[in-house]
Length: 337
Image (cartoon, one colour):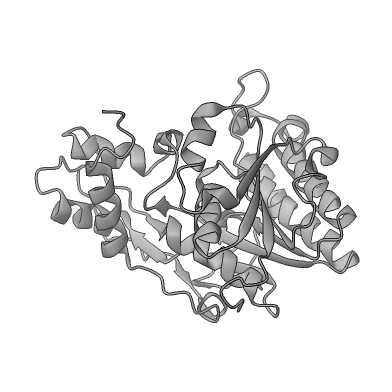
């Protein structure tokens, strides 16, 4: 662990204005790091305005960069010790508006999978060119769903099969599986320490107003205001989650631990949607509830958190995470009044 950041280490966060990236920037600045952050267009004053409100933002420098062009990363990666890749957001729609699930394999690869995979490799190649030996990628638990399914998932043995994902028209999910495998291969061949964090279900207090366009913030804000819940009927399914601040701690923890590498679950746990809604009802007593499920609730996904727990990051339970999220939303955090 770095002691008070007295050596003033600098990191690069690619996708610094995104939901995950901005949370990493916030935590890194609070810990005393210098941060170079990239976004597609640093002249976007609305985004920069909120990034510059972060504590210690005098230690944050922002750059424009597009993952299609590795040369864009030369300046932001200069004199940095690690690169956090958080710009690989899911793509669900093709160039002409066609949904990914409606594509064939040719279009699925050309328009959904390859742009993200190639963009990731461009960033890693730029890091290699800059002599950087520490890379941390934000991926997704969608790459950890083997066929047949297993009762107790771990992030080392259990992989999704991209061929099966493509057969099922899940090109967006297959993107993460392919990207991870390609990144692991490249980093192994080039002696780069690679860690991959696998989150889903992001709660907490995001940094930019545009982040409220994501679930669960959309539907939580709606039920707070007396509107409808996310579902008409409670799904007989489970969902995983984590607080953004805890996820950011996991990212910094794997970087700060020189023996850490490989894949790590970035989730607290998985809960049945019935339990999620019941917890919401405790905090918003007058909320409109969806119809209940019929039959026996399925067992939530279970994870082996041995690797995650070795990072010694204290993770909020769901009750605390949900309460903090709802309390924060009730403050109307981005109001200009």
